[in-house]
Amino acid sequence: MKTKKQENSTRNSNLRQSLWEFVKFTAIAAIIIIPIRLWVAQPFIVSGSSMVPNFENGEYLIVDEFSYHFRGPARGEIIIFRYPNNPSKFFIKRIIGMPNETIEINNGEIRIYNEEFPGGVDIEETYLQNKPMDNLTVTLGNDEYYVMGDNRSQSSDSRIWGPLQKDLIIGRAWMRLWPPNKASIYF
Image (cartoon, rainbow, N blue to C red; front, side, top):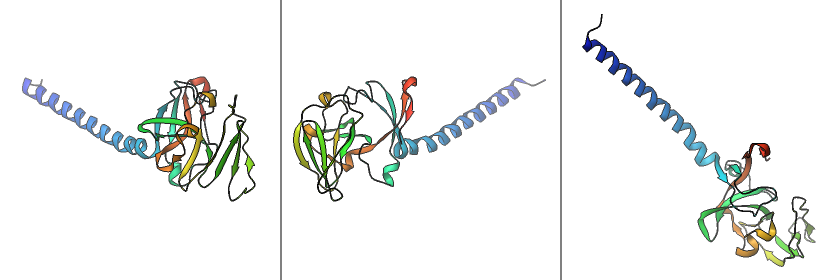
């Protein structure tokens, strides 16, 4: 039979052991999760209708921040970036124009001029439901991208605030987790 002092000592030892296990678990979780969250992937919730019908308001995405350490953004990719006029806000848009290209929009049709296609090439946009009748020509600099929402009539994008600087790009949409019936991975 244990004395009260022995019972208290055993209880304190078990409490210390449990507390130490909790501290170790928390430290290991932080060592694993924090770098992933900072440099590999982060969550993003779509806000607004600028990417409808491909991304709806309230959908939950995982943003791939890692792949752009090894390669640059590509035309057609859906990216998340800091809004140039207020970097505390995040936007989601599709890359239309790449650095050093000239983008010509004529009645909603997009033509790209670059070294590979000096005579220009038309961009196929099968993901669009409507094309507003925009008309403009923009030439991009070394680290500039031209981005547009898929729902052109409801999108604040490069047509309004100009080219996007590369250093504002966070990453590309990699995975849609919510809603479950639309869960998907983007390569």
